Image (cartoon, rainbow, N blue to C red; front, side):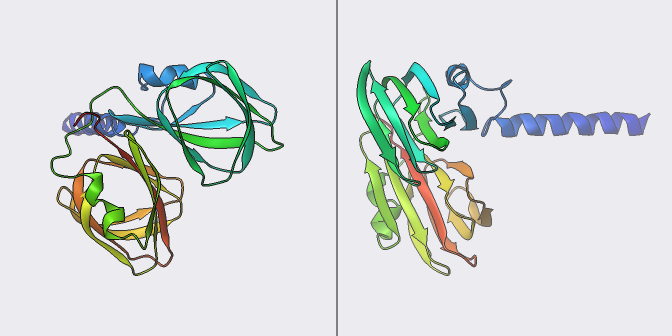
Length: 242
């Protein structure tokens, strides 16, 4: 009897653990928010979601199209080369071509798209959700990774809502302590780093290309302890009005 009770408690603990983790990165249709379900019906794939932001992956076959639908203010990251026909607010704006790794911004509004290329077009859509972002304390984009390591970083986009920075950290190189606001990290390559922050302490972390993870605002530093260059994109979400 005791063994049976302990077994049941263990199963319950595991279930609770999985449920808790799901709040940070939800990817199953049973648990996604109402904000996500509408775009999933268009064929978008949810690849990351937490309380504050979400990432959808769009895959569009040659000559396939999506009808006009609403979109929030968003960052687009191109996963491959493609050419699309773009319609915005009912106006056909012609063809647009993007290369793998290109990043661009779209304001909120209705839009439609058609793949005009001969291969599947794929891109990621980074969007803030309705929930207010956590407070950043004294951390700001003014003293972020680019401010302390411009030789390893490039600012791709900055506006009132987002700051997108590309980081290319050579093997053995390090970035000193700096601020980071609420942000997602998209791994462009496989890499391993020694990471230190005022919230997480010290640890070694390993990431694979295509992984996405979230950090609340913090002070942090890192060193590339792997055998290859560490390449990743930092998508910082600004607190509007603060």
